[in-house]
Length: 264
Image (tube, rainbow, N blue to C red; front, side, top):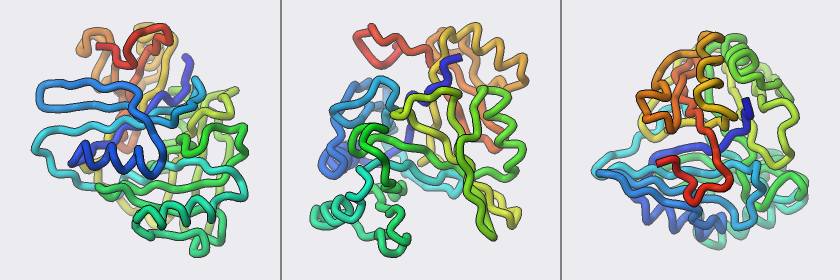
């Protein structure tokens, strides 16, 4: 299994407003678009994306109101080390809402929000680790850290590459073995107080690349991954499983030579 995170999908209430926001403030460009019956999907990313970099997928369903549940955390985007304050001030000058500035985060990171309230963390990284504003990680909340870590390490052969533990919560970062520096990782956040979380429609899914959709799906079934939407039910174009907390994970066999980023 390849295992590289291909994209993170979030839903938006006003597609044109969201596109303008990401294109203006994060300098994203539209990579591809699919117009369906009552919905539109758009892939976005920095102009100079590494082949192992993750895309941001915006999905808009006509007439759908967006709710942000607390099971969904945030996406994180990269800026060069030493330029966090500079880029945050540029965003403020552009009219982005002041949510959590670098000073309030001890100068280590900052947060902004998009038009639907999706949180975006800004993190400092070495320029060799990906283009400006490229996706660094996606954070989701989990109710059982051991179960969540076991899911990613056993089902997807991910490694725990970093953890940070405080008095009240812990963050665990997982990614495929030998992941490229430009690849996106998954952050699992576990709060010690035993709280539960809600899955609302604003949060969509993570997508993981596979080498062979049918073979890798069968292997996931051997490893007892939930059979949520198998390849056959999706015309053998993609499939979906779920983690123990109900976060959806798409499996996609990416063809780098294809004319479209979509398997349709």
